[in-house]
Length: 255
Image 1 (spheres, helix red, strand yellow):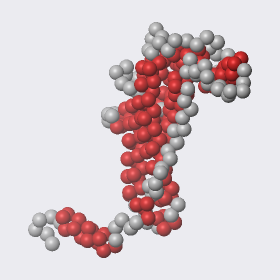
Image 2 (cartoon, one colour):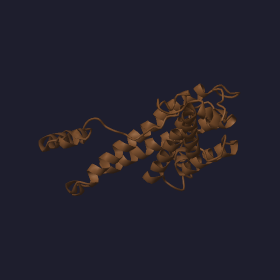
Image 3 (tube, helix red, strand yellow):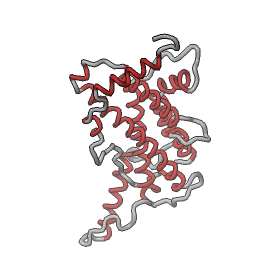
């Protein structure tokens, strides 16, 4: 297998990598928000005492999360050529898939990828070739030398189809207020499905363009739930705030 030059007739690998690095941060931010929300929700649903105290706070928090994530999904699925999104990135790749060909992928592995001193050169070369082909086969498909435009179009269609309910909702209720309204309201499962799918796209292209296998899970290095172990509002403070609120709501001239 002959390794290809990094530069192609379309976008260079470096240009695509620059786009991909930014998209990785955007998708990771979605995963971070998802991690925080799900963690707080487990605190709420896992505490029997909290179930004794219904509150609009839970609805407010959930709706705020859903709306912000829905807008974020709309951004990563934006098909405007002027924007940075997963859709526009995939379209750039579709214009010229050669930077993610098997040969281009192989060029990311130096000749000394297998450097065991006791192995003959031909064995090292054979093992390097095997590493390249195994990685590419898993990401793209066995025996495929380069994804076709049709293959990448399918990736775009799959992403947009998965996000369709969310996109309709944001267009009819968040970005605009359509009098007819959306037929469906996106669920947490809808949001999670797009995040998971977007993560897989990022991981696939990080492998193809950088030969990097990336764990995009969120790993906290401190006890981020510590604030929930502290009483936020002592009872006497709550009554003081309630009295101030009632006083402020009393019309002038009334007692």
